[in-house]
Length: 160
Image 1 (cartoon, rainbow, N blue to C red):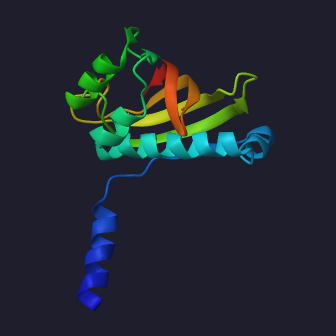
Image 2 (cartoon, rainbow, N blue to C red):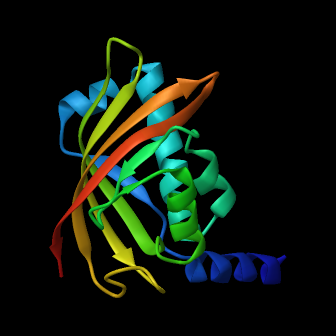
């Protein structure tokens, strides 16, 4: 039993840093109580964890076929190109944290999440080994009971 516990603790210590979100806004904390916003924040957390873990299946599943991503590399990507970048190690992070400034439901039912991302690219990703701060806007929609990232925009603001 002791060996199992020690092994488990070593595995947790060796695991890559987890992804997380925080907020400084009481409005975001209140919005997170709304079921649709809560569901999107949970889906976003799974996506961010997949980015850190290199989990292609979870990453790919979040994008509907008509998704559009305005990437931090200043180009517009459709799902196939975004998935190819992930598969090539160009989207790879050792940590991925978000500070959410806004989360809310639009009249059409879409959920908007906006704020700052602080990430540490690794491997073949641009700015590997540095700390990247970027602003983001994500538009999520419910596709028959599953929240999908339909529109995403991210802009790098600083690289340290």
